[in-house]
Length: 170
Image 1: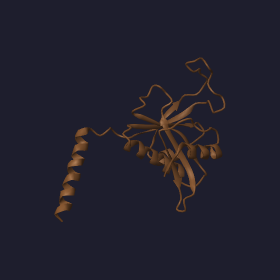
Image 2: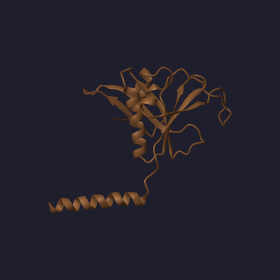
Image 3: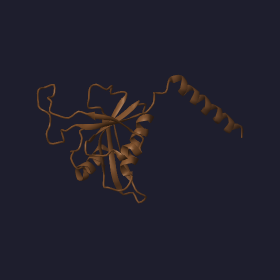
Image 4: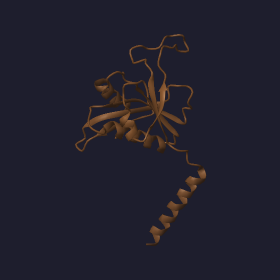
C-alpha cells in the first residue's frame, strides 16, 4: 500500500537498526497483512550520489521490517515495479557489508560490488555524519527498462480505442 513519508518514517524510527528517518522521498510503500497490520516499509528517493541522473535513477534510502518472512523482498520488488511504472530506468540501494543481500537477490536485484565508505567532506567543508555506519557498503541495483516512447503509447491508445469500439458493437 502507498505510505506518506510521515508513516514510513515512523516505522523507520521504531524499527530500523542503524538509520534515522529521511528528509524526503519520491514515494514510500508499506507491506500489510490480510487484517491491515503494517509489517514493513520502503522509502524510495533520488540518488545521493550526484554521479547518477535523478530523472533516470531511484535509490532505496530506507527499508525496514518487523522481521516477518518475505517482507523485505516483497518491498524491494514493489519499489522496482513502481519505479518502472513511473518511467525510471534503474533503481539501486546500498547495504552494510555484513548483510547478505538475500532479499535483494530474491527480488531480482544484482550485486555490483563494494562502494563508498570512509570519511569525506561535503561541498561546504563539513565532515560526513558519524551517527550512521560509514564503512564500505555493497551496491545493488535493478535495471527497470527504458521509458516508453510516444509512438509506443500511441499504439496502446489504438488498441484501447479498438477494444472500446468492439464493446460498443456487442
